[in-house]
Amino acid sequence: MLALALGAVINLEPPSAGAEENRVLAVVQKMNSTFKTVEDYTCEVEQIFYQNGEENERYRFKFYFKRGKKIRVDFSRPHSALTILYSEGDQEAIVLPFRFLPALKFRISVDNPLLHTPAGQRINQTDMEYFIKFLFKSLETVEQKRDEFYEDNDQIRFWLWGYDYIGGKDLEKYQVLLLKRNWLPIRIERYHLEGIPLEVSIIQNYAINTHLNDKLFLP
Image (tube, rainbow, N blue to C red; front, side):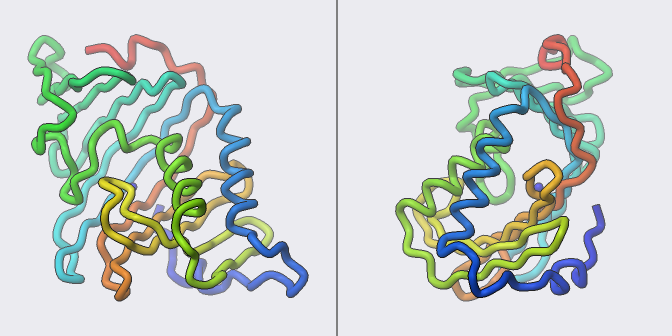
């Protein structure tokens, strides 16, 4: 999932009346084409989970991604020494309870609830490639309720309706705020259709194409 002030979102101005009919699709296409040039990235994430509209849990971690879906997650909250490693196609992830003790490691199925977020998200559903595919699928399969799209010189904010990005079963709505300089989101909000919050991801300090070493994704 940067302390983004709410006012920074509200102050975005709506586009002109002559804007393209499907601006959200155009933005997602731009996100996709730009991400194709990304071989690796790191970022810092804070995820806030809600229950019955009230904040329930909060996670903080550093996220590493390398093309070929190599993933590393270094937690700082609630487990300050925990690291999870995953490679595309594997049915298990490697869990290091204490990353300063790499000899102590476990292999756990990606379907094991022990590896899921409070929302049920699996480790192989955490990267930006997966999220962009989710956006495309939602635009293709779900009728968008209304065109809510706001833009300024640096940022774009839009709403999107789709089946949940975890199991694809429940119809929900999402608000996405992204930066034009890299076409990556810095805030993703997830809601019940009634507007009750489910989850907020705040993403900051992207570092793109820094040539991450493969060893980083090994225990």
